[in-house]
Figure 1 (cartoon, rainbow, N blue to C red):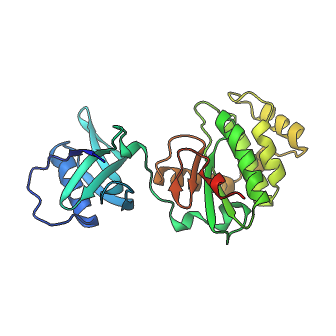
Figure 2 (cartoon, one colour; figure 1 turned 180 degrees about the vertical axis):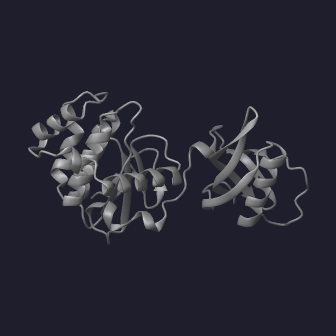
Figure 3 (cartoon, rainbow, N blue to C red; figure 1 turned 30 degrees about the vertical axis):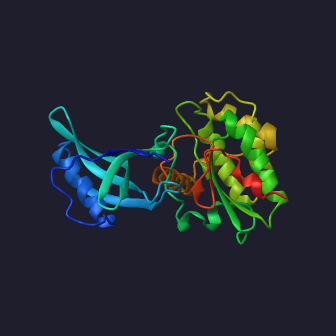
Length: 275
């Protein structure tokens, strides 16, 4: 295969035989501060691994805490950055033989702490294959895919364990706010049936009236939630955790599905393990 790379133009020559984690962070910091004129306060390596089929290229997913100049002032921002390394080479982009950029085909691997009891939904925690899902109940593709996936995992508990993360897309589906909070409560109660039913909630995704949404939830599930219950501090904390994991895994939309720690852009690779 022929791979296209766009190497970093760094203002000094690499004097090492191989670039390690510390080297990657050092060079990116130098590049951003020298070329981009943006001070970097902190760089964290989120995940790194060898990219299959690239003859040894390794991908690094970084999180940069930077001060970016806007006008005459600096704004603190957290910026994701993907880079590739091989030997003493560092590249911003790596493309396959079809000219597809790997930075758009890959995501960080799921950290072990993401598979906690609070996010386990169905299947078995000891199953050989783990699925991690990030979903919005009003996303049309989620509605088509996720309830079916939940049912398949319920039917195959010796094969899969499914971990569920809420990712409400509030800009386009403001009704997801209340609905997701109700789903979180059902999840905590172990009421998987009612959680799934909220993928079919009869309410406009753009609805912002909380009473209208709570009424629709009552009509769909038979459960009446009070506003105080929905807006409890522990629910906000739980959803903030989900949002932080979304950022860590560089997720940009729904549904996003990881199979055995690795992002599955097809969303259906888990089916190969179904008997």
